[in-house]
Length: 116
Image 1: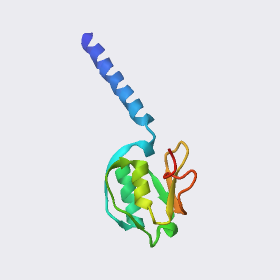
Image 2 (image 1 turned 90 degrees about the horizontal axis):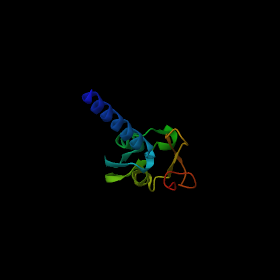
Image 3 (image 1 turned 30 degrees about the horizontal axis):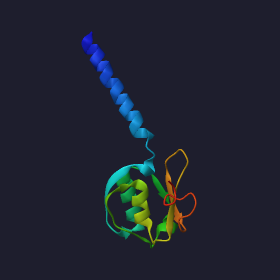
Image 4 (image 1 turned 180 degrees about the vertical axis):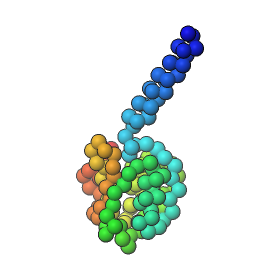
């Protein structure tokens, strides 16, 4: 019976860790990035994979634009800011879905670069 008690404690501890990990907003999570400067069509999906987030962008908005190098450990928000700096693109995070949308336009209210 004591073994069962220990097993239950481990499961509960794992459940608590999962809740704590998922409580951190996706943009605030720190990740290690190695995204080279490249065409936006490649840079945005590469960043999304490394960040563990979903990013939606129009091919028309991204076409002909180059994203910047993002190398090192940053919050997803800071990495995204670096990726898009000077490209004419801005990002905004959807409410509770965690999906990030990239569009033409400078960062403003509601953008990932301006969100805290």
